[in-house]
Amino acid sequence: MIYYDKPHFIIKKNLQKSANTGEYFSDFITEDVMSDVCRRICGETDYTYIFVDNDYEDDLVERSYNKGRMALMLYKDVVSYISFSEKEIRGRNSSVQSVTTAYNIYYMSSHPKKSLYYYFLDLNGNPETDYIFMMYRLMKTIGFTFLNPEAITQRIDAFNSVEDIMTARKLNSDRNSSNNSTYITKSSALQIDIYGKTYGANKYATGMMCYAMALLASKKQKLTLYEVLEGDLKELPKSCLDVIAKMGKIKVIKTDMQLEKKVFEENNSLRSPRYLFNLLDRLGTKRCALCECEIPELIQGAHIWSVADIKKQPLTLEKKLSYATDGHNGLWLCENHHKMFDENLIRIKPNGRISYHSSENRHILFMKKITLVEKINDEYMSEKFIEYLEQRNRAII
Ligand SMILES: [Zn+2]
Image (cartoon, rainbow, N blue to C red):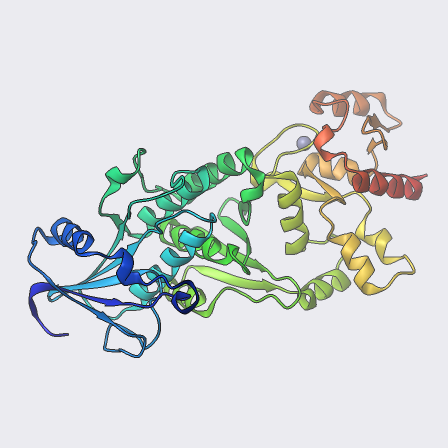
C-alpha cells in the first residue's frame, strides 16, 4: 500500500442496486460526512477522496460494486474500513446485511494494520429496536468501533461471554418471537449448539451471531452451527463460511433432508437438528413443560407421537419424516420427565391434563411431588399437538 501523508478516502460509488434505485453512495457520503469521519478517526480535517466505479480494483478494493456500504480511508500505513448505516431503516435485516459483509471484507483483508468502524448517517425510522440494538452489541463484540455513538440514545456494550449472548437472545426472543432466525442452546456443559436459518435475509444475522460466539467462546467450549436448509435454499454465503473457517472455532453441519433421512433411518431416539430447530421455533428456549427446569443441558425434545411408532406406519418416508420433525409433535422435558413420559408413567390427555400410572403408590406420590403443573400450558396446545396426543394415547391403550 502507498504511504499516505494525508487521509485519503477510496469509495465505490455504486451500491448493489444503484442502477435500479438511482441512489449512489456518493449521494450519502458528502464532504461533511467525510470530514466528520476523518476527524473522529485520526483528528485530521484535511483529506482527499476519490469515488471510483465498479471496475476499479487495487490490493484493498475488489472489482465489483460497493459491498458492505463501505468507505476505505488510508492514512500513513493504516487502512480504516468504515461501514455506514442506511439513511432509512426499512427492514430489520437490510442494515445487518451490509455490516456482516463489511466485516467479512475487513476480516479477510491481509493488510497488517487495519481497523473497522461504523458510522450512523442521519437516520429516518427507529434505529434502536430490540433486534437492531442486539446487532449493534454483536458488532461491538466482533470489533466494530462506533464513530458517532451519540447518534443513538442507548449505550452500546459488547457481550462478555457466550452465556451473555444466550441471555440477551432469550430476552429478545421472548419479547418478539418473530425475530427468531437463530437459536443458541447448550446440549452439555461445554457443547453449545447454534441452530440458524442460513438463507434469505436471516443468513447475515446468523453469520454475525456466529462470529461473536466464536470470538467469545472459552478454550473448552465447543460450538456447532446447524445450518437449517430448506428446499433449494442455500447454506451461509461463502464469504461468511470463509470467516467462520478462518476463526476455526465452529463446526458447521448442514442439516439438509439427506442428513435428516439418514438420522431418521438409523435411530429411534431422533436427535434431529431440524426437529430441535422446529421445537425452538415453536416453544422458545428450553424449559421442562412439567417442572419448569431451565438447565439446558438437562432438557430434551420429547416426541409425542414416537419415532418408533411413526416408522411402523404405512406412509412414505417423506411423510414419516415430516411427522418426526414437526415442532408440534413434541415438548421440552427434563431428562427425568422425559423418561417418565416415554415409559408412560406420566401421560398427557388430549385436554392437556396430566395423569400418573404406577402400581406403587409411593412412585405416584414422588412423580406428583416433582411435577409442578396439573395441566400442560395452553401455549403448547395447538390443534396438531392435540392430534399427536390422541395418536400417542391410541398406541398406549
Ligand atoms: Zn422436568
